[in-house]
Length: 445
Ligand SMILES: Cc1cc2nc3c(=O)[nH]c(=O)nc-3n(C[C@H](O)[C@H](O)[C@H](O)COP(=O)(O)OP(=O)(O)OC[C@H]3O[C@@H](n4cnc5c(N)ncnc54)[C@H](O)[C@@H]3O)c2cc1C
Image (spheres, rainbow, N blue to C red):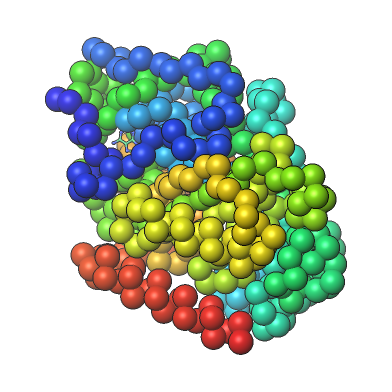
């Protein structure tokens, strides 16, 4: 059977573009691709999906002394992991004080520990495997879009101080925020100096090379059609072969709809389009003004924007795409307008790169880890916050094989609820986008 020319069950008219237009693909120095699977292979564990989650699961399987095969329908890092903003932020979608109100202080303290463990794991991979991927703890600003958002950030800083004794995070005044970002749009900011940035595609490539050198077997261009469970293991079926293993780990994220065995998980995620632009290199005058200390930034809007400098001085600017999956020019036109709203000085600067990707969002904005029977485990639903958390859940996913059933609290299987009315995805997304757009406008008045 031939791999379909569309992305894993999405309708044929919504094919995702290859990496051709991303700044990451253009600045990837070497790319060694592995051949597709042909024939029969065996291993202790087979990982389906070679993004950050799958790579971390494979790395942990290796540490546990298990033999491991990774299969990816396209290439390692082809999905969201090779297209993202490369920002490993030490926050969740919900603020600390919102989470404390909703889940209680104990659960929120646990989540605080987990996000730090995630970014530490990322750093350990970079160091222990010697990956050249521009990783650095650049520091991250959460920029308050209006005064009320600043009050929420103040509550967060207070929660960190009182509940976990974390005084590394600071509040930044309006004036200082303007100096650090180069935009007078914000009421102030929350600054965490420990949040990190990296070149995500170089990292995927580096992980693949390091793991391959240590015995993990990779097969790219290998679409998994299904997983059959047997009493003593699994059989993973692909177009030209199969893998027999004791366990399968599903790391297919927003593309899970192609896997019949995971149809129940798929009902609990909504794939949404995310778009990014990167400018042409900024002049030295603009470089001196915009993000002079190379910080990473996310704003507090419901339909948020994030941005950073990449490739020696281009501004990468990302945000929500159009509700349909289509790689529509509107995705990037709107982003450019949003970028100019933040940085009016960029009105005459050209866009050098435009690309899109898909993320799987969940009802509670947390990713989830769980099991399908005794032999198949999954970690999915990272939304737009996966750079850090894939490093946590990927690791714990592989540990499931050894009987470790750490639930990860709010990220557990029990908390992973179906998306209501998922069949109405498009109208719901359109209505939601219009609602949040209006809410963002009204809140800023
Ligand atoms: C444009 C964009 C910007 C983003 N920016 C940020 C950011 O700055 N910070 C942040 O924290 N997060 C960001 N994210 C989110 C983050 O990238 C994701 O949450 C994360 O990469 C998910 O990783 P993953 O490994 O779970 O999935 P993916 O990286 O999507 O990997 C899934 C893989 O599974 C493979 N696959 C799917 N189905 C099959 C099958 N049947 N058989 C074989 N292989 C299969 C796919 O080919 C793919 O390679 C962004 C996402 C996008 C798209």
